Image 1: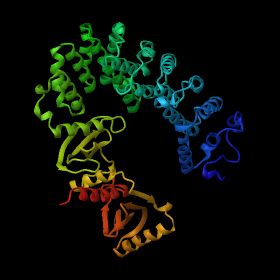
Image 2 (image 1 turned 45 degrees about the horizontal axis):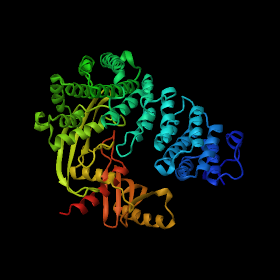
Image 3 (image 1 turned 90 degrees about the horizontal axis):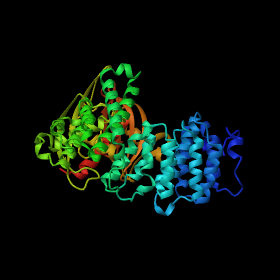
Length: 541
């Protein structure tokens, strides 16, 4: 088969390493997977995507195939520097973790041993081996959890995010946790900074859910207080002298994020342990500028009976980035009546949703300098059974490289597109977000270069309509289907203005590109097209 179709090339990258241990009876899927690992680095993007899809068989594979897969990977795993092969290995191990979710797919003793062996073989520099820990916590028998705890204590993933992922299945109220298999042993892993936060979160979960008579870390209270004090000092230095602590904004953000995550877990743990001797360290945390840390310290102090913590918590409701958390904590403490009503309205909560989204690590990473309400209406929204409060907010940032602003949505979802929506009407902005969110089997598009002969004829008909309407420089982009109706999406010019255009059997819909820095593109134009159709069908005049 040709290289472009994703099979092994004539000269595989690892001919000896990847084929050395395969017997003649190996499943076809497994044989092909190892061929894919051979060839992956030399394939084009589409062929790589096909390889990634082919890993799905692992999620339902028989134990014999899983066992042989683990043996093959343990003997021939790609080096961490082979970035392309590691990408495929990431998909393989992710599917492996999925395979063992549910009691019907428990690990055998042999497979458990091979998982642990492969984990060690991949080594501390591996960016994918955390999936093997997830396989242990997904299966979650007593022996699985015992092995998981030992690996976390002795050899945790080096990245904090990766270290946290395997803990997620354990923090599930619908699934009984075998506490004795994992606690208190896993608390010894607090010595590893990248694993300390999820370990404490697990201990806090066990205490909060009544799975243990006392907090599992109660005897470590002094150690936790010292750790909180050290983190408070570190965060204080990061706030006052960031240039001395980090070489780049990204490094600074990661340092703050990791420190805050552990500080939050420590505040929670000390509040659950409930010893008043912890209050001095909590007061130190309350003095920091970071809103999330202040909220957690205030909540912990309030639970320990400190009025200063209660007062600080009430004041923090004014801060949109932490408002929802403050309201939840105030409700738990019976303090909602003390929170000003203007911070509890639907608009205030919607603003908090959007600001929290924008401040997330995958978005801007910080709260906007300003956020103001642009529009509010109650309407039926795709995916919602009842009429929903929908809000648009204009937000802005003052950054070293200049100002940045846009209009985001809250209510049915908290989200903001990258393209500048500032010049659009509220109707068009709502449509853009509704179209972006729309997911349905009968709403789909095909790129123009992938159309078959019949589809090309249909697209050509719309191109002729655009020519007749005076559009120039037409570059077809996609052909779309909307509940049986067809539409062509293209970029074009009209009267010398660049933009995007959608043509269907009912007409032509034009959108000028707009601002030069973040202009509206064909995707946004098609979002608006789909969204208008959806919103009009759900909200007839």
